[in-house]
Length: 384
Ligand code: GLU
Image (tube, rainbow, N blue to C red):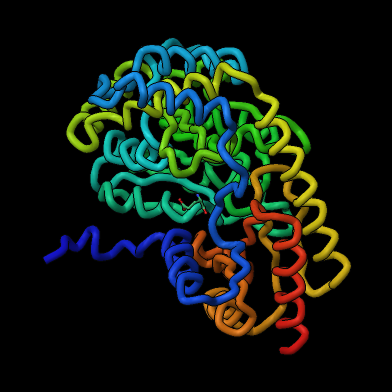
């Protein structure tokens, strides 16, 4: 009964693993979960209070489909100020980040179009591209090159059917940050071949070394970029499902049309709280980022001390993508780690063909969990 287009798409590797962990835990299993990319911190108090105020004031009905004007403006102000993106409120659509990516694929792609994307990259890009009837074209990146995208390989992959390039920096799953010269080279390629860029910047604030740059801030790029970001990771607000897309007005109109036919609008009473998140105190955000850095350092020390895995030092996000030296698929290894060592990790192959031989660790959990989880992983690997 299900369409072939959807039947051919696998379920999200990250979400299904997290569902499995939840059900094992409900049955009493003691699992250390490095699976879901989800901060364990509480949403900042000022944001929660703003939401409660909004509920108490009866702000519980539909909002304009593109979001309340105050939030569209707050996103535009932040994106001009912090990202250098030349946008106004009319260029912003409020929507969950993941829905923004899905709608971008639907709004910008026709069946048979090709989309260039880094390999490995986040599990749902390929699914969104396929759901739109388009074809993903993976550009392999390698451990030895720190998983940095090589613009020459992008150029070689372009055909008359190429319509878009998907970027994600800092990267899920590698934690790599795209250097400025690579962004510039990608921008030049996009302009030369008249391509649109979808830039997923959801980890933009979680950076330890280097700095974040938005490709839409480069000369001429605003007109050909959909920039997507949100509150989930920066403000520990994953359950709020609030993010945004920034694009030229024509693109926003297309996304808004899809939004009006799908979810109508985002939840109303969370939107004033999102204004507070973006324009209120940023101390909690900065504290969480410092904590993530400490956790990265701890996890890297544990890996280096044990000497059983190889791992690039990530500059951002909250993921490690270690390489293992075993004759076993990453799916099998992850399954055995969960069943035998009670640690949940995401198989590297879920992120594309170049992810085979790796697994992803989300270290957005407490330090005691990081120590315990690595202890279990290392004991398991030694046992092999
Ligand atoms: N983006 C997070 C992750 O990669 C959350 C799950 C998902 O949306 O894939 O773990």
